Length: 434
Image 1 (spheres, rainbow, N blue to C red):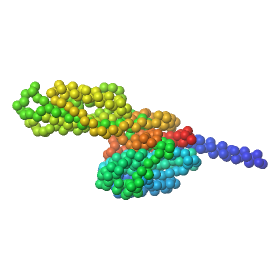
Image 2 (tube, helix red, strand yellow):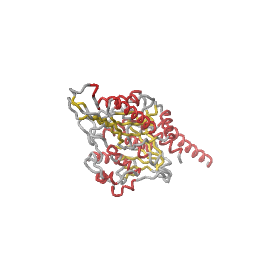
Image 3 (cartoon, rainbow, N blue to C red):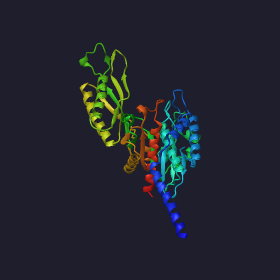
């Protein structure tokens, strides 16, 4: 009798393990549930154009955060707000002394923004928790879903968590009209003790973020998943061309020192040099101002901006050096001078962890999703978290590459695909790092 009881127990245990193992590869996010929650969240700060204006620290932001916290609590998470105003929902693991697997995004928007930027990452993170709950899966590591505060205005919450938010930053006036200090306090944070929001490298195992691409590559190529190689570095320069203003009617063409002609050639040179070598680097001349700005006066001075973005800082600076050399040459040929002045952005590239990228790739492949590696040319909270832990991101397609607009759209199935990859990656990390 004891032997039969033992065999039954063994079969039961084996069966449970087998079921759990069999279910894990096939855990799929629910697109209808995700879309329903996206639509519910979009009511907070909804605008007539169909998008949202849910500015960080605004009343709409406060109401949207309350909705997310309700979902967190309903999913059994232990919810708190840290000193930086970040919402953190914790799910205990088997061994809570292990470092945390952190994942999430933000829900604040730009003015007249869309319903998917940031929101997909938060709703997708909650979807992972729902699937774990439904399948009675307990991870070894504790899990934390994070909603960062005021991402759009200056990565406020992630700056606080990574230790990069200084006292001067707290006095910055945000798009909501509040200072960061006031805004953090209004959403339940504690600006006077902002340092307590900092997380140590030993405390976090990894940070993962699901996000819409905000570009058109995945949509155009009909690819399901983007594996982010890193977040590009950004530098900006003010470029000033100085010639000589003179009468446009009485000055012969061969006697002119036209600053605008040199500036025009500079714009073309930027495009030619940036595209002269393979890669995804970008260079943009976004502002040009000619003085004195009269139809009958030769422009004597032109100020322009140059912005460059690239995953490799060395590559970006080498291209910039070529642009400077070429611009000085063409300025001389047009009898004007030129000066480049750095705006000292010093936004360095934040590279994804190669090992986690491989796990994301494996997860996408095993789930049957097409995927490709790609850089992120937009800023994300992940770039701050990369300072204190390993980081990786999962992109899903943006319809027609539109973002920061009411026309921003990601299909429910695409959102679900991303959440499925996110969860599978979390489980792989959990299984391999304890």
